[in-house]
Length: 213
Ligand SMILES: N[C@@H](CCC(=O)N[C@@H](CS)C(=O)NCC(=O)O)C(=O)O
Image 1 (cartoon, protein in one colour):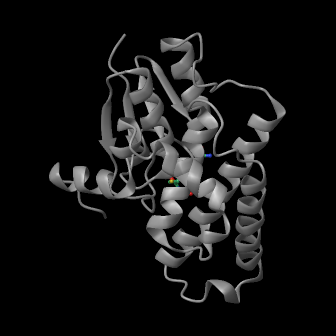
Image 2 (cartoon, protein in one colour):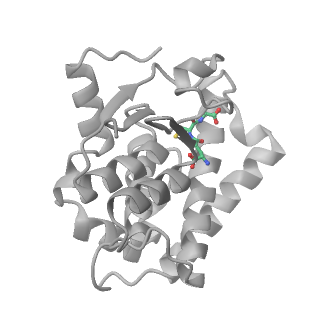
């Protein structure tokens, strides 16, 4: 089949999940960088009608939703699922839901700010999203074992969330979550992780001539 084509943006943490899975599985792919996520034509998002990234195009298939893409890749390239991408353990499912929820809340707040709203905390719903970020991080802290064996998909998504939070600094008080920080630090030098940090992805994109919209 053709080389998979991944549509994303350099700083998208949802896209990064897929990039790390591709690298861990040793799958070569083409990374198509869109100009940003405020454009309103689906072509910019690889055909995703929801106008979000990531989108994976592989042969005749177009897939959206980072976790669905990761599952598709595992089925294609790693049926043994060494990273536990398809795990249905309750803890794994809840971890994924909490990380995704915190990521999504952060995206809403960042895009509201980027769209011109200066006083995020003046909107009751946005205050709730912030509170849920704090509660979600506290849940992760309580359910993270920094010494657990092996890198799994739960670690990958947590790393993407954590380093994105550090990059944007929209959320303060990250030092309240030392177990999460320790778990992330444990894998920080792994090639697939180090090569896709926000700073590395941005530098790579700029070197390739990418400019944000
Ligand atoms: N549930 C989606 C979320 C994707 C998502 O929200 N991506 C962000 C970039 S990190 C985006 O494109 N946001 C634009 C928007 O929400 O309109 C997934 O897992 O792929």
